[in-house]
Length: 597
Image (cartoon, rainbow, N blue to C red; front, side):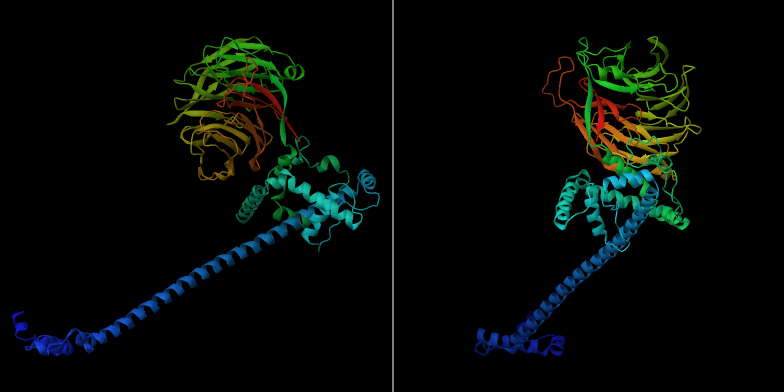
């Protein structure tokens, strides 16, 4: 600074920055009058030149920012274009898939028409219904699907097309009927199931496997079927070319399972009350029913719960006799609250029960006697099951974290599976006594081969809360119920790795957050209770309810309505393979319900 006071600048500034040095010397002129004024400073080249450079730099920065903004917009538009192109490709693939499937279904329908036309009775009925001789379906190979749907709307009403104005009215009526139907109300969900079924079928075809299984629709005993079996209805079938069947099996393997589910879903629409079981136990303040079970022939059903009694009723007597009070034909008194019941499928008079004290009991209903008690569990037993394939084998699951296998004849356990969580439910498949499924408080479903009880054959992971029930739908499919508000359908054949994290369906619609609400399966229909005091029925093919029924909030003793929103369905059981079920709620009300179209 002292050098600067004497107008002495460092040599580097004089060499590298002559303009700045000259400006500094001007400012430090020894004569004050020779020093620059403020206006001189603002007009000096040293000040004005950098200002121009700054403006240029600002303009360059602004231009660069605008270019970057345009690049961002371009990138955004290109991304939209890419995604829309991908959507368009998928839409074209979907349209192509639908066209192929429509062709497959139409081919099948034409084959059935040819078979039907060979029957004289069918022809007579056809002539009777259509005097003009018009066929049931007039579909050409080059006809548009929309035209086919329009014609189908007319013909499904059972009248031939007449004049143009009549056709318009009928089309409008058919459209209105279609739009108001349950199928159209659930169209989105049905559509998603269709595409899910097709993806699985194509994936299985690509891996060399087949999803085609035995369809109950082809069985003469298939309940709710809308398809008549060829064996029973066709005496002289028209044989289609071999190539058609080969191609049909390869490309149309999805049709039978999806059609079966759709027909079953549309077969019934509501539940009606066949009978109310009117009973009153004045000596017990609580009538909560924990268990319901039909015997092997569907003639008798048992009820049990917190009143420590097992009551046996005759189903037809209750349905046919409208009495003020229904009395049980047999009543078995226990020492503890009953949690589960199971009839023996071989010995008609034998029923097993479990209670809150951890005891498994075998009863002889015909003699009203306790036959055997098995007391190896240390805590409450939630669930028991007797194998249909081996009626001497019983399984029980307990809060002590164990599943015990019992020989009914010996009255002692013959095996134990130990786990780290409470066991809430056990179930044998109907066709085998060598395997067992059970649900646990650790949110998982376990499937064991009892010949190797050390490790599970499969573990199903997907529920977020306790698994309260498991039931086999068939030998390779089971459904589980949880207090996470869902039922889940599992395919055991897809569990080769030992862990299955992908259920076939998650059924939603009912409410279940804290209570045991019951679960029962019959011929593909799945019935469960709800904490809204409703019974819900699903079909295994679709994740939405087929129907539901609301219990009234009534007192089981007086029959009067009560203001109790806490009532819930506590147990439910199908009557064999029929369309009838029995359901009970937490207040002890028991109803026999029947599915109706």
